[in-house]
Length: 288
Image 1 (cartoon, helix red, strand yellow):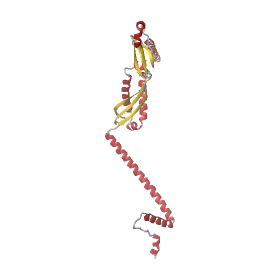
Image 2: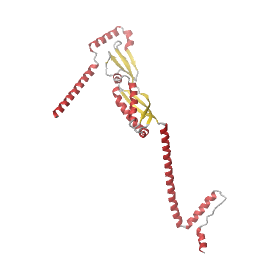
Image 3: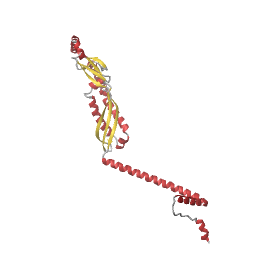
Image 4: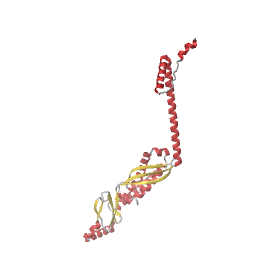
């Protein structure tokens, strides 16, 4: 059993080494033109030299500061480094080139109907900022880098938000944007694209869910208000109890309180003033 397993592992390792060697040979030979290719290139060069005053307009090309040119000679990429910015030369009969814009591009993710983890349907849209950092990969590895990134952003938005609850979706937008950026950046790296930023723009909830959440918030606010009022009454009753204990220890303090109450009533300009008669004055008559 052990010998069979070790022999199988050795065969797998040898197979991987052979595949890597074949890929390396293909990478090395990808830029080579061969005999026929060089012959056509020499003929094209002779044609350019022979008709020099006229072919100069066909050979000289210009790319701007934010652009790069990927040159194909007989269908092969001649150099692993793009040309530009500024002037560069091509052979009119054998070469063609593709311009690649290196500026940051932004696009809106269309509103997506998403079912969250807690079975709530929401509509979410966003915006993505990306740029091309490797022109050769963006031309050779994908048909349309911009369109592919747009489609991938839509599917990534659905996949990421499908694993979140509604509360997480409403409160943790920054974390969701960061996870989307990492997923997009990893997926578009073979295309030579760098995803710089992803933002969630708007989260639209159904009308029934909005009304339910508003009713829940109003009920919670009323409950907190009642709790605060009850706590205030409890503190006021404790303060009144302590004040009554202090006044009971000093009868003169009670008389001063009576006078303060009279002063307060008089300040309000009432026509009728009720003067409280102390019970202590009536006790002597009651004893008689």
